[in-house]
Structures are given as C-alpha cells and as structure tokens.
Length: 534
Image (tube, rainbow, N blue to C red):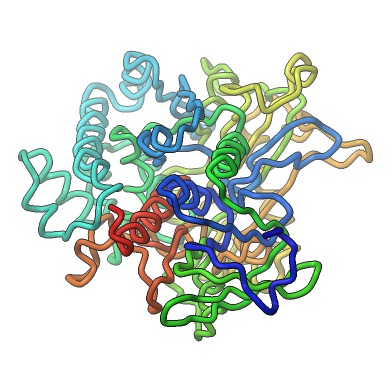
C-alpha cells in the first residue's frame, strides 16, 4: 500500500484510523501500534502536531514558539516512559510574579519554586505572618486535592461517591469540600486577605473560560483543578525544545512502530458500519477513503458532529475566553517595581491587572459585552528557562520569546468585529506593560525585515477559525470533573460517542484539556479493551 494510491474501489483497512495529529492523537497512535495494531493518522495540515505545533512565527528569526499551547503540567511521566519519549521537562525557578498598584506606585511579589523563604518574605510583606499562614493553608488544601485526583487520571473513571469514600484524612475531606462542593471564591477569601494574592490564586480558575469566583456552576473550580493537580504538586514545567520536541518524538516513535501518517488529508465523513467504518477524506489528489474497525477523533465537538452527519449547536456554557499573544523581544524590559529583577519576573508567570477586585469588574464588563478597560493577563518567557528554542546568535544578543494569555476576553467580544477588537485589546495590554516597565515596552520588541513588530495575536474567534475550536475554547468545551458524571459512565474511559467504535481522542473527552495526553491514552485503552487486549 502506498500513501497516495487510489482508494476509491478498495479502501485500505486498518485496525484504527485516527483523525487529527494533535499530541493526544499521536499518543493514542503510539499506544495502539505498540500493542501490535495497524494505525493510520489523518492530518489536514502539512505538519503534524495540531495545537501543539512549534513554528517560526516570525520567519525572519530562528525562534521556535509554541504557537497555540504553552507549558506542561498534566502530562503523566508514565506516558513518557511507556512510549520511550526522552522529553525533558524543566522546572522554572520562579513560579510567578504578580504586579499591583499601591499608594500610586507599582509593587509586586514573587513566588519562588526554589526558595520557600523568598516566597514567605514576599507574602509576609503583603499582610504579615497571618497572610503567610493563610497562603500555606491554601497550598496544603490544593496538595491534598491533587493527591486525590492525580493518581486516577490514567484509570477508568471512578464515581464521585467512590472518590468521597476514599478520602483518608480530615484535610482531604476539607479539600474536597473547598474545591468540589463550594465555589472557589469562598476558599480563597477565607484563606488570604490581600487583593493581589487573592487574584493570583483565582487566575488558575479563569484561564480559558468565562467565569468568576462565585459561579454557581463551579466552572471556576473545574478549571482550577486542571491547573493545580499536575504531577501531584501542580508545578508547571517547560518542555525543552518547545512543543515541537514532544511532537517530533511522538512522530518518530510512531514511524518506528509502523504508524502511517497522511498529511494534507482532511476527513470529511465517517460512514459507520457494523464491522468497519469508512473515513472519507479530501486530498490534493482527490477523494481518498480508509477503512477501520475503530475510528478515533482528535478534533473539536463541532468537527466530530460534522463527520458523523449530526447536528451541533454551540452552548454558552462552553464559550472560550482567551487571547494569546506571541512576541519576540530584543531584550527584557526594565521594571519600575523596586526590588524585582526582570529575569526573575519574566521566568515565572507574570501577572498583570489580575487583582481579585479588578477581575470581578473585568468579568462584569466582559459579561455585558464590553471589552474590559484593563483586561487581565499573564505572560511567561520560555527562553529564560530553555534557550534552545532560539538560535545561538539570538541568545547571545539577548533576545527572548514572550507569550501572553488574556483573561476575561470571551468569544462574544470578538465575534462581530474581530479585527478592531483584536487591535484594541493589544493596545490595552501594551498600555498596561508601560505602567509596569521603566521604559517603553514596545521599544523592547524585535522588528522583522519590513519593520513590523514581532507580535502575533490570536483571539478566541481566531482559534475557532484556525483550529476549529468551538467558540475558541482551548478545552474544546467546559472542563469536566475528574470523576464520572453519571452512573453509566462509571468504569468507562470517558471517550465514548453516540456511535460504537468511534471514540474521542481529544480535549472534549472526560478529563480532557491542556497538554496532558490523558484523552489519547484513554481512547487507546478503550480500543484495547474492546479487543480484549488489556
């Protein structure tokens, strides 16, 4: 069989066809091929990786940015070991820097991953010993809920009741109450008092979704859990070489295991059958068809529905809320915050306009259809921890990458006039940086050969147009709980669709979202279970 042979009369048959080559699809392909199954991966683009691609976003510079995704927290070490991946995950010595205004002056504090004493000193400076104790209390609660959920992510779904009955201490029971039963805002407000520290803790509940601290749906709680349970400690790691290192290794291992990759093939329809399904694809050489016993779909819900010929309507509860800005700096900007070095501030997550009270107001403005006057955002500089994504001459000249994630910028704000709103929100981000920097932020940006600033901005509307993400939701839909959402789902892998032997291998699966590989692993396990190979 050759990749581009005519398939109209006889469709090549595989055990499994995977639609979409994001990291979840690639992980599923590797597990299934490792088990001895024949696997084909269909990718509509010319490059593999989906939203986990790294690209030379600014072609005049040899700098590789993860265009859509960012750091890694939820990728289990077991997946790397099982698949023989040599991906190095580097710790950041600084967890975060939070800027805030006080007495008409710019202030800020650091959270250090390397020195608890540094963190203690900064937080005591916000509110004394009581604030430090409250912060430690909150951290202890998050660690306990991580111990509850993290070990189960590569297991079949347990019921909520099973989790509750497994809680082994008063602290775990309290953590469950704080993060599963009650709005996140209640716990934050009971533990810490300083507005900027409250805001820092709340941001993990808002990234990518449109919500607020006391949302009765507990969307903020579910989002928060995805950001704090990774590795059992919630620490976010930097993939050495960027996301392309993960994609490249998954591709190479897949080729060694016999996976067939079809680039430039767009899946149009999955025709279901009692024994085999057929996947009809559009290619440069015309229509091609593949047959398979199982079909895995690593794509957004609307794309899955279209392939199955099913109706699909967007749900407001699944609305995405994110702006991503990729930048290349000629140098790190000087800060006007006393006692904070720029290399420390930009190593961790750099929080701007994310005070607790300010985000209540920015949420209110966004919820009524207004672009927030001071839209909150956070940034990180990959190259401070991992300079390998830059050419040596750029490193020597002091260049750095910078990635910004905006909050309280829901899809609805950009759906009518994306271009104008995109320009305006970028202007507001730069204005905010000018308040914090001791020089013009724009002057620190690199320019390409035509004099254009090295800045690329993607709104939720752009993410829908470019990646097919429903309403620009980076989780594909509202983040799920880590337990079964119904009695019938208990004991399953959370990847089922309405069609037998068609499974979700992407972020819209139960426990999907972020760079975790969990949906890809789960889809592969479901196939192996169907075949009595587990």
